[in-house]
Amino acid sequence: MKFFADTAEIADIKELAATGLLDGVTTNPSLIMKSGRDFIEVTKEICGIVDGPVSAEVVALDHDGMMKEAEKLRKIADNVCIKVPLTIDGLKTCKALTSDGTMVNVTLCFSANQALLAAKAGATFVSPFVGRHDDNGFDGMELISDIRLIFDNYDFGTEILVASVRHGIHVLQAAKIGADVMTAPPAVIRGLVKHVLTDKGIEGFLADWAKTGQTI
Ligand code: E4P
Image (cartoon, rainbow, N blue to C red):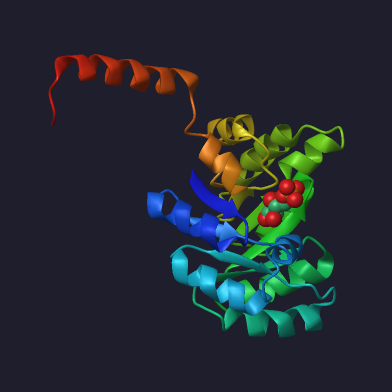
């Protein structure tokens, strides 16, 4: 499963990229707002740090407007992936852009039927939001299972990008289901390495090593 960082914070992206575990980045208008940076500038900087896809979201709601914005965004770098909302205009834009060889991430997916439409529109990625789905009394992971089943039934090439990931259990479940990608806040990705027994084990080994009086 590929790991994308869901952030526009450069320091976090650099730190995760240095581990070699980062396969891409997703941003959205709220994350750009949080960063306090200029959208085009920060996207360009992120694209220079990671080799993989960097999602940059359009804000127009109509097809023509989305195409105009996508035109500007895709000039930023070769690894820009245009993010469009799961609406009729978004799907139309997705079809037009992917037919032209541009990567597209169809975002704000909350049903398996919506994901089916994104796949039919040729999306590179579809982003079901598991956390927000859970928050509203639905089962986010059941949605991922349904999408996996449907995409496998028809051999769709669209990658399932599990979004709105809130904790390690989401990551584990997404991997068990066979999701292609998950995007999570840097803190969630960093948290995956933590285990109390790992820390305890290191502590014990170091204490015994000190008793040997040796160095490596
Ligand atoms: C995905 O691309 C979105 O940016 C993101 O995962 C939304 O997550 P949130 O529900 O935590 O805002």
